[in-house]
Image (cartoon, rainbow, N blue to C red):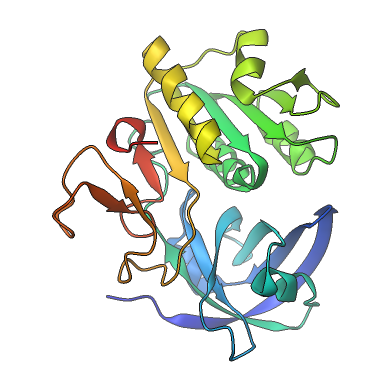
Length: 265
């Protein structure tokens, strides 16, 4: 059954960093089903731009029926979203995708969350969900930025037990990648959940294989329909997909979260 498109009220919009914005929307029906690692698709108001913009869920406020989305402005749709004000309406479809298997892995107590760039927002959602599931779980968040213009680090600092930061230019934390930061700070754990650009995910996958740690990756991919119909966001997989009968997976429908061993990066 397909997801219905709902009109959601905008509650708050804030700029977090250059081109990075946070928006809270009232979405009671979506919140009832939403899980950490899922995303929603937002439709522009301009009829000339038909395709929705997929945005990962950053925070789920179950009691208030609100969702927080954090996104980077990269084109018309996200630029329009950044200009909205409280009281505006936005058309939203979701929740979409499969989310991270937190309940299934709740016996794994030492959790490493890795986020790079705009892959950081869903990691805040994961951190909150893990602590809600098991307050005694030890969560280490490893986050990577291009430069000193960070965002959500304070939010993650509040919920995670440990916070490790890397920057490409060395302006904060470790000078290098998230893997460099993990090695420099001797980050160890029982499981890794990660979201970010493909080169980062490739490094995380290799790290998990090297140390025998199970890894789940949330892939960032351009999407069109968001529901698995158009095959515009396929990634290469290690097994034959039941839908396409080739070694491909639909990121929006089969993912965006995959066990690292199931995808080729």
